[in-house]
Amino acid sequence: MKHYKFVLVLVMFINILASCKKDFLDVPDKTVLLRQAYVVDLKTTENFLNGIYVEIAKFHHGYYLIYPELIADNIKPVAGSIPLNSHYLWAQQADDSKSAFGNTTFNMNPVWRDGYRIIRECSFILETVDQYRSEDNVKADNIKGQAYALRALIHSFLVSTFAQAYSFSSDASHQGIPYITTSNWTTPVTIQTVAEVYESLISDLTNAIELLPSASTNALTMNRNAARAFLSRIYFFKGDYQSSKNIAKEVSNEVPIMTGSAYPSKLFTPQETEALFQLRPASVTVGDPFSTFFAGRYFASPSQQFLATNDIATILTETPQDVRKAWVTLQSGNWAISKYPSGVVPNYGNPASAYFQTLIRSSEIYLIAAESYAKLNIEDSARFYLDAIRKRANPAAFSVTASGQALLDSINKERRKELAFEGFRMYDLLRLKQGVKRNDALNTSAKDLPYPSEKAVSPIPFSDANVSGLPQNPGY
Image (cartoon, rainbow, N blue to C red; front, side, top):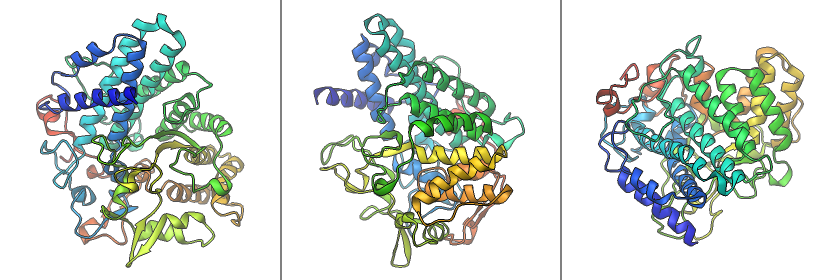
């Protein structure tokens, strides 16, 4: 417990010092002296890494995972709710008014700010850990592998939020984000193309896989299978279906989907055996200042701010035998989101946020395998992985016989159902070059967002576009 509290104190100092920054990237990093004074051996390097995991749990504020569902067609605000309303209306603003989510946050600046801070902390570990390798070579490799994978993880969220999908241009030469590989704030920051960002993602994850021990299966840290699964996702978003299929097949053989009574009751709990990487809630007692606010908090009373759309509710409930119909609940004419469990962690300040937020799970990997096989015209294998997901949710379901585009449509529909409310929907629409159509939009201006649209991605923070000289995203 003393170690845990010290890590949280370390994180607190990082937050306090980081809050003094006037802009996000091109400023002195006042955490440098703190981390250099603390990290003096392999043990303190590992402790610093543990602090980063706490930061990543806080980074995955519920609003972040809600965002790609909200700007698409799976989630809508409760009538009269203010948070993320500009995002829902595709009316984000390029300003620096807020660096934390709240009623007057008109962009995704908090994700940019916190993401790049975590990235620099990961880079600091990569620059430091080899100094202490003589203490324990295996542990040094493990720490280094985790830092590589976590750096890629955060960059991938940023490129999905602040740049168009890889398929937006024929060679992905369109504007991406900075891919930062140093903890040194004085190093010039430039925008890379999306193609260059993906090359760096693949490089970091490849390095991670080579370093992480094959025996580690702890889903609360970035382990080797999690890094492999994440690399499969990156290849998949890139459109390299051969590579994504190869890795997905290997990972799914080692970490199969849950079946029987475990599904879906054990999703987002410590007993979720298909979880490849999940985040632990940071709060351990009521009123803990390091409480994390996962998405479930904003789907349930008394903090309910968002509902399921009629579109996704219709899809989830269309088959009475499908157990996923319980992920939405009709309440006073609206569909409440009930996918995330409550009270998994006892004595938590907000029970609706007291669960384990899984970021990578085998169900996603099965669906990646299904779509990749279909894209490669190996349709028997595509149907095999698709049926595994369908029949797990509904044992009475008939086997899929569809082919060609009909098979791809079935896979994408199943992907939308299985991964609903987990932060994928808008990114899937963009990679498939599809617009947003909302049948129950709150007003007429929010009904359709045709593809392509400049408003499908967030603006770069004003200070980095106008002070640090980064090009602003078109349309802002």
